[in-house]
Image 1 (tube, one colour):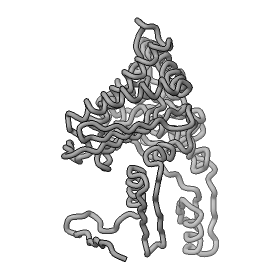
Image 2 (tube, rainbow, N blue to C red):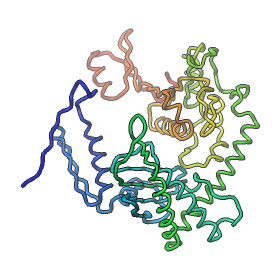
Image 3 (cartoon, rainbow, N blue to C red):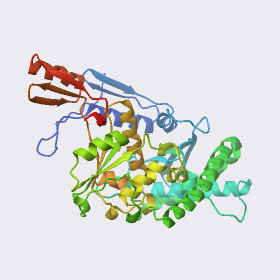
Image 4 (spheres, rainbow, N blue to C red):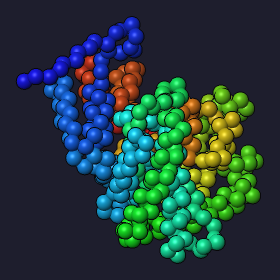
Length: 411
């Protein structure tokens, strides 16, 4: 056999760690295999005996199907376009799902452009124009009526855009944004042309896509009215803080903490244990709405979410202003069981979808309550897992008392 072997050793003076992550490398290999149909890539880690081989003859079509593997899709097969112009190749695979958020991945010469760039701008513009042109031509919209917004056309969309071009220019500190200005025009014109042709040739797929966008437009208008009503009622006014919020006395937000706790029982225990100078407690009634599966107008009608919005005071989505945050530390404190984990996930989803800057700024925390209290004489130890319990009991010896906490209310 012939071939080339490339070996390297990371320099400890340059890299923070020289221990390469198998999971990270494996995910990257999978990504490259998706982007290059028919390419076979293998990875192995002798120390852990882990190995994987990737080959996808369907290319980015399989990539979209992989991303949507646990979602309900509105049409069976992803839409696929492959166009060329001026030494630039544009590959696009896209599929609509019943979700309410977009999931678009862009690549330039196999590099993951996570910050987007000119190819992303061109695609978004082409999609919005094409969806509107088709909707008006075939009666989904009135000829002189209001057009669908870009966010309407992208709701529920999963897409992978891969461009190949000579001399790519990358921008940003991490060089993950494509900056070639001519690429926008290439992507916009060719995708518009070919996507419109596809929709005309596949009316059932077109109907699923356009109907989704029209419903999104109607929901957006309903959400706008709900937002205006919210604003008029002073939802974010500090004078309208929810009655069940046990606020703190400190006025400097950078010193204040808000604990979101599960139910009134846990709220009572938390209020007794807190330092009322800088710690506020907000009990929540059960599980909040799953915002991943709900439109904005429905979200704003949910009492628990309205309570959180009022307490934080930052606004949300495009109107979010982190400088108005009343607390710089928001602690999610739920029971150490399956229901508690579910509530925690729902809260994190809400923050990620509608208040993402809070997470990026490091304002959101997860409190980890213990599962057990182990006591022997006057010595008490709190443990967080069954394994740790066994080790603690063994270390403390005979005569230990074990208390299993069923919830925060017992602590």
